[in-house]
Length: 180
Image (tube, rainbow, N blue to C red; front, side, top):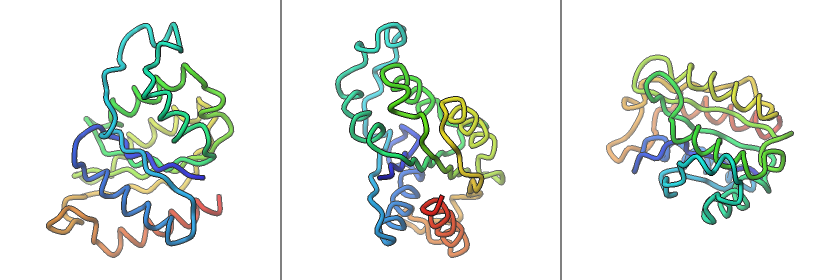
């Protein structure tokens, strides 16, 4: 099983639309996939006690961890650029679930990264940062990271990705990750 993580808490984000397109690519290939959109979860779990007492982690976050993270062996992270890096909400989420069950959540699993930005770099720095964090958590990150640059030019009026070259690159990334 595979979980796609749409890595921003921004409502109606482009990252979510791109994540949904990637989800369909996996489904078309018969993969068991689920989508975790950080925008759909509360973000009131930021408090110092979460690091000292793993049972203080809110029940909803434990349920998300038990549904979307612990039972899977692969993650596909879709992360937009925020201030030249990865979204703080994604890093906070990883930090929060790490304290309860680090090994069962991350160790020995695999990940692939898709970055997106309005600018030219496709969030290369954010993907590098996340790859470093995931490697520290003993997650093997597939080398084919896919930057998507100039994202706003690649969408239709409803905000869905339509650029043929971008979709082809994402299809290639999905196919390689299935085989990884």
